[in-house]
Image (cartoon, rainbow, N blue to C red; front, side, top):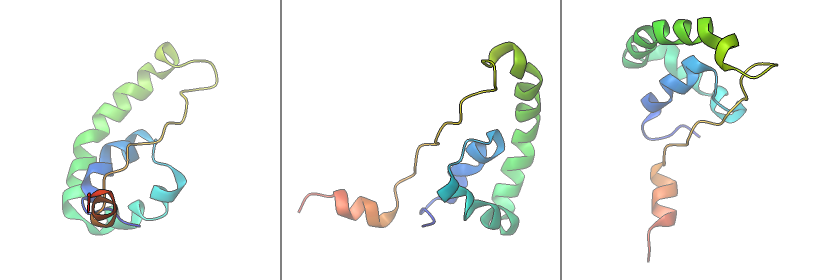
Length: 83
């Protein structure tokens, strides 16, 4: 399911920490979203700098794969609201 604000996933996508569920929809969103494309372009140097530092700050075998926090969707917000 695509969240209400998919733009918040750009940083996690650039860093390679999206889970499989989010990787199923985000690349297609990125390809058609000018805002996300602009954000990704702006974050690209950060990813390159972190990659250059990777061996110095990562444990053997590379960094652990983390899940990005999920942005609430309108459905999950409604379900969590008190009745």
